[in-house]
Length: 132
Image (cartoon, rainbow, N blue to C red; front, side, top):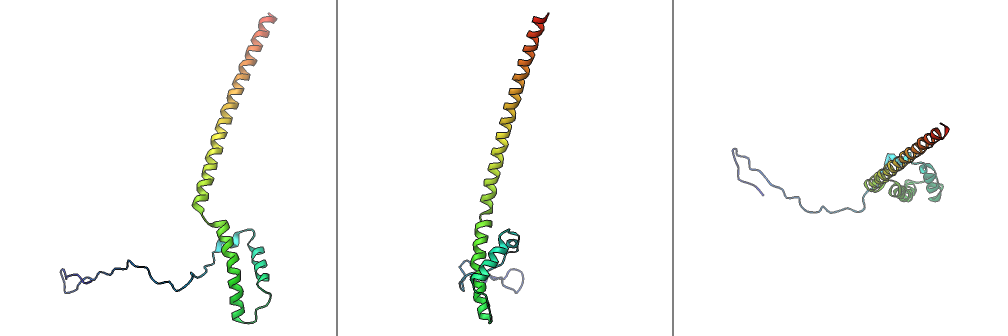
């Protein structure tokens, strides 16, 4: 829709793009560089490559082989790198719980050492009383 001109002879135009664009099929595969750092990446890639067939003589065969390997890489990504925010929250919760338990343990240990110190003091006092 065109709006009325304001200060010049140009008319502003409003485009409404609030509709879904048609999809042309599946989303293309995007290789994530961080996958290389995964300890099992090389073995997974080697196994997937062998499983997909040893030889590629045409570009079509190579594309097919890469499509087969893509499934394994997507699975590796999903199993190890998905839901990062949930994993961070879970790990943070475990950290806070561990720190809380450590504080309780330190407080109990400090209390126990205080009691032992009092008992030793009382024992030495009683020994001093009996020795005099």
